[in-house]
Length: 386
Image 1: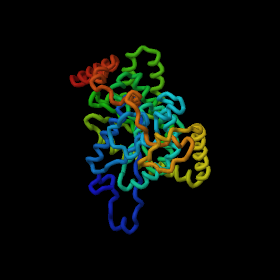
Image 2: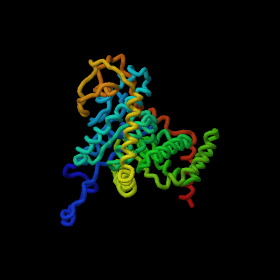
Image 3: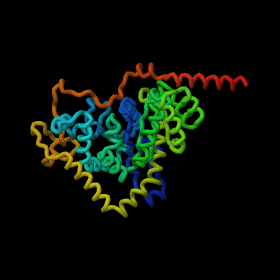
């Protein structure tokens, strides 16, 4: 890391440390997930800018093959490695199927990405991984599991779940977000941070209060009369323990609020990985190394078989910037830099993070949320007069 980086991230030097040098800390990989429109990509952009201001530039990886443009300079871009449009044509797939297949192809070469990260981890303390806007494409796919486990087996890895605070003021919508976050936590089994984004529109403290105070959440939920509210009422009891151990940070990807708090949570999550998760992966490597390698090879081989032998017009093939140039025949022929396409063939961006800010603000206050705010204001007024 460059001189001048945050002291909390550096290894202190003293005579004892010089005599018995500690191993350099590995890079901290942040896998950023979030529903479409949550501001995930904008958050990665803001975090990148913030880390540059701290003289700790991150290593950036884009895993969305269908996005038209990304607002940050990616060190590794899946679009430079897999031709998304060619995948759709060759396999006769729609946009979502094309994204899944492109990720599968990319996963077969992820060992090369690991080598690039290993080479750069002394210079880049953080590795930011932006995933597709269709969250289920990465979270529940075989390729997503392969990528996540590959990173977690070598580097300190933290899952960052970005949620749209302004669209979670409805208790039922809030509970849906929390249930999805809970499912991802138990799926990945890694340190987990929930980012409540867009606090410049709606302050996130109402959500924190709902998580900490069951009765307050029930009061807000009582304003709802839908069938889903009954299910939400039952599920709120189930998530009580999930809330107690959850790291939550309010941030604004627009004005940068909360970024220092987020980095502090990342430091704690990385420390948790080292004490609780790394020993688990080391035991796996020691006791089940051969079985794990065989399992991963079988997964990769299955992905390759799923791709089939697809021929491709050689006019689309270019040398990749970040991947090796010796492209194998067969399905690997689709692993290449993206070709030039006509403007009329351009797809709509897959990641809808950049929604109109004013529109989100206009729709931010659900009726139940307004009543909740009015009740809270009355309680504060009553308490002040007593």
